[in-house]
Image 1 (cartoon, helix red, strand yellow):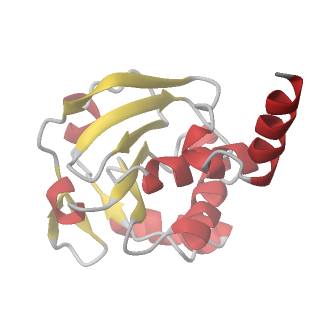
Image 2 (tube, rainbow, N blue to C red):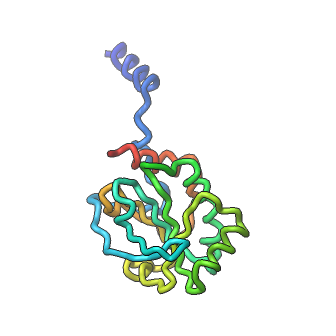
Length: 175
């Protein structure tokens, strides 16, 4: 019996569990059953209309933020680094600004802090914030490949921290 236990432990060390076994980060409210999201509309840096359906087939980290929000400003570089590290055909960080001053305010902010990997998306009406039920900013939703919410985090986070990257990689791997 002890011999089998030792073999099992050895196998577990040799073949660790996939990263999708990573625990949810602190303050992340995961859903047991993915939930449908209401439709929201926004525009890209060139004023072209977008919706979350434009990201179908990808895992999306939707971050609702504004340049005037101090915690948002602090976490934006971590989102930029997360997009640089994991962004691609399977995953995208969608940073959705609620700035009423329009895309120029966001462009200026991106230049000031050196954001180079995030696309500029904006909802100057801030309607998306209310439609999604934001109680404050920042608010971040994790969305599966079918466009359903699998959890959210209210408040800032270090999105490029190793445990966060492992957690998100696990969601990407869970096809």
